[in-house]
Image (cartoon, rainbow, N blue to C red; front, side, top):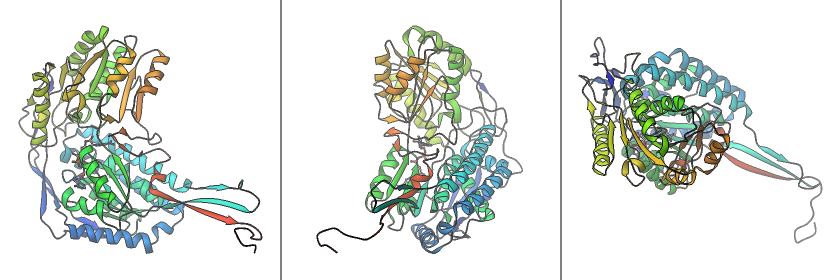
Length: 501
Ligand code: NAD
């Protein structure tokens, strides 16, 4: 049995009513209201406006005006940087409130939410530094009569669309870089977890971001998101979410040939060799599988273990998994919180049942947990999984670990690469050559060697294949929100072409 604790009801708590931010003004919009029921507590905790197509049009018009005629793109990098640094300070000062909102709206553990807020503040600081360093290139090597200069210009109005699993962290992987470049933005958080992104609007106003530069819409994808991805006044779409909606986003954006950046799903392998530090790996496997209840694009949901150690290692992972604390998201000791919606819990259960029918064994868990309130899933381990099973190929997005085995390095690489995703991968071996060989051959945007799910604002993140397009974080992140413009300049008297001058 895994460790569980019953959920305490939310007492002395009033649901918060939020408004959208359009052109510097808070508005209820023209539509209905979306009620968010806390996945861990079963009561309404937030209400947001259900934005309409007309609201989306107004927000895009405001961002367009702020870009075409406003001060933000025309400021110096240092001026933008100072405002972003101020925003980072306010984020840090309000971190507890933001973490609380992310915790109750998404069901993630409060201690984890606080860690995400600290990481987010660091990203805002890092992007602020890049705002001062954004520069182009010059070519003084093109002959006596020519000087070439390549400018970096803000791309324009950016639509930013984010998912529910890391509400504040993911908007922080996009917006500060877009702002650092001098862009203006229309932001749409998930309709399940919009609260902290709306508070970010307050923070940006306080930090000095001018009206219209950042507009925040709430509402559904088909209503609001579809306008944000098709409107001719939008220059770029930066999307994080499922591969299916990512595909639709790209198709929508293709109508007006917008630049698209996509951070999509993952089915990330961890390949483990017998000579690895197995104590460290077992710990990382448990963390990698159940962090954020497995509702994580980076989840290490697919273990590929050398056959000689598979039995022993699976048993050790199962033992450690029983010590993982599943419970009230607001309890500081909780490690695994609630599942985002009852429908999603059902989907996770369907994957487990499907794997069992296909011949996998349930080595641990396998069912929902009743903790009195909300919806929870037991940490689950499936052994005897083969590469053709759905659970080995598709994103389960729950605390479900699939164990596969290999004999040779070639076979391990083949299994790792035999899926449509390519977000991240892990390799565990004390042999440096083995780590580097696997690192080169695995088709993934990040390869962890003898560690898992570590990250830093400096390190780019993104996927190969159907895990996405483009990279976030790292020093190139800000360049993603720019166009290059070439100045080809002549020096001295002009002669040539067909007619002598
Ligand atoms: P989702 O694709 O259902 O929704 C993401 C966002 O898109 C939401 O804001 C939603 O309202 C919006 N949307 C939905 N339909 C739309 C439409 N027709 N037009 C425009 N926007 C639309 O994803 P989700 O369920 O919120 O998030 C989970 C998914 O996100 C998982 O697949 C996960 O792997 C992925 N994810 C990827 C990363 C990464 O960095 N690669 C990070 C986190 C989550």
